[in-house]
Length: 299
Ligand code: PRP
Ligand code: ZN
Image (cartoon, rainbow, N blue to C red; front, side, top):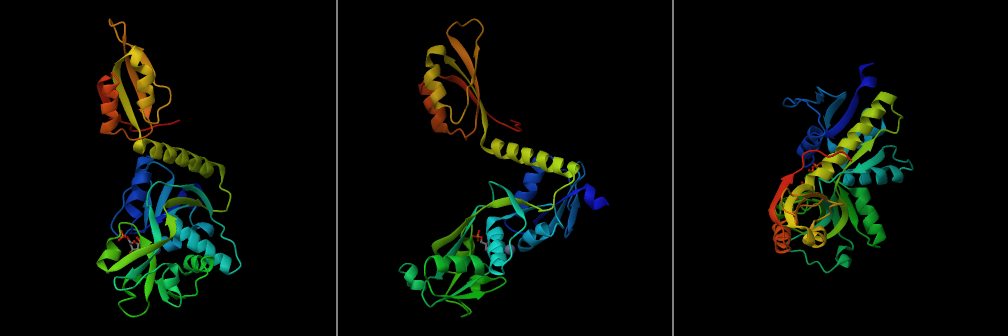
């Protein structure tokens, strides 16, 4: 009963995506408290609860309709899809939207002493990974015959243990590879976080909350880079100044009291505004330039 009224979203329990996922939900206005080791958080001001699980379990939880939504990396989504396809079934979760965080790549990495001379160096080698299906597709597409050693974790130590010649694993900052004397040689898959949903149709009220959440996520993503910029300029400099404002639609131009030729220009810039831009604006005749962060935006 309770279940059917409230949305449930699955989020990575502890890992690269956890903090960003919770931050995104908080920016969408969700208030919740999370105790240590708590499996679930109740949203206090929205009918939305957060379930903390291993990221690899998220696609299943969503396609089995245990959760309505899931925040997970494309790497996990793609591996799941391919694993199911290999068994002759089709993934049933739906990808709704890519999100602009959790960027990383699935890459091949070799030990320092490995002599890598292009993909042909992989022939006949053992490659350790937790992404056997994605790796298999890559090998197939590149006509490489190699052995895939499927592990459930700690892939980076497989070469040292003699279980593999190289690895295929996620890289984001590269510090895991560095710490294990491994060198990235080629990218297999680019990834970032995404939102997936259950294949089961949602009752109206839940569907409405999903729509609202998506709109807010959109707003959050737009706002991240956006700035509100205000400046004074002679009217004659306007064409030049409009050209310099990064990613802004038609700015607002307001006459300044008492000074015939000078105007104030206000614009929302959908890209970050760098010092170089401010310097160019000044050179074009702008003065009293102010750049402000944008907190919320609803198109
Ligand atoms: C990945 C990967 C590495 C680490 C790489 O783990 O397995 O351990 O991130 O990041 P780095 O380049 O910044 O060092 P992930 O967070 O996806 O957790 P999981 O594999 O345990 O699910
Ligand atoms: Zn994982």
